[in-house]
Image (cartoon, rainbow, N blue to C red):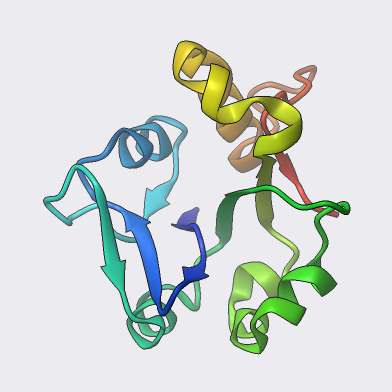
Length: 140
């Protein structure tokens, strides 16, 4: 499945570079990252038109964030109406990591095997049928 990452912030959409650890993890999880051919190891700022053009048909959308209330599709739509145009939004295929509740930034780098298992479970649940995600969860 194809996947896009992150969201629009401060007039830019910062996507993980194609040579970043996030891009590698998405590949290892059996997905086709939209910007896999990019040569950067860090995030790359793009305008929202570029992301819409390249990723509107992506199967999944991965987001890491922190919200005071439970994350939802209506919350995301209220942030930017353009989000509702993505197939991943329409088909309810957003994989969300609540960085505040999971300790993603504090522990995630020490548990790459858990992050990878979460992504595998999201993209290919049949591979890990008994698995319980720790960081990333598919938003209902």
